[in-house]
Length: 309
Image 1 (cartoon, rainbow, N blue to C red):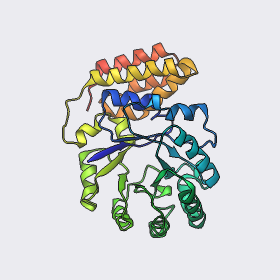
Image 2: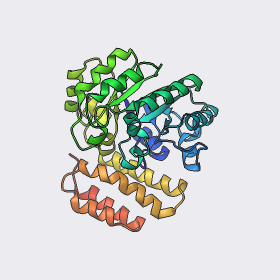
Image 3: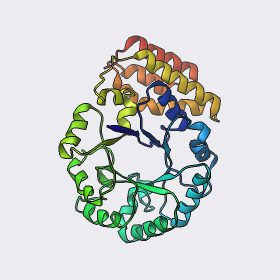
Image 4: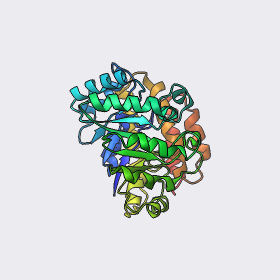
């Protein structure tokens, strides 16, 4: 079984990814948070610079509904040495969807078809696609697959939810196997947070050989070890070192000083708090911290007083 790290805007930055690889690893491929600027911004360049991603397989993800924009971005990525890119047709955010980007592009299949025809004709790189199964009804999935089957998609990553489901409603794993008829590599995405969740997906389609992990692995960095059957003893020291290293690197490498560093760290703790028992008051202190010293004191108290589940 192979595991990929999903792109999560604001969290899975190059600093997070490379530090995760150092302390935990087990990830087959990492994906960048989406790139959307025709001429890559400084932030986007930092995400894809080879020196920021040494020792990892990285797939840049592009968010676009304009062929010219997509193709211009791929030119820049090719110059950095990339041979594969990923098209984001999965983001459910309202601001993205309203512009017919991300999963919003699925609402206009004729426009999506024309877009795919042009980029597959002109792009020299391999293109994989991360998709949802529709906007508001499962019946849309069949029409979406009819579009996809026209093109040499390198891999289809399927988040088994509709756009309207966002991340709150249950996944729909029974929809996954319908894409087998495309005859291309498939990857399952959506709420794989435990061996039980993994087994439920495999029960529906026993041929799954790759999972993309997102919120589940941010909440539990040992998840790949658990899913692989190694059931590690919880290691608070490793987790604390991991978080301290991320903090130090953000402070050293990112503009904005303590303020931006704290913002990034608090985003991680939105998910990570669920890994501990009796954690609420400590996470509240982390979220309220206005200075790095306050954050560090709150984190030390949490690790001293709370046990990992």
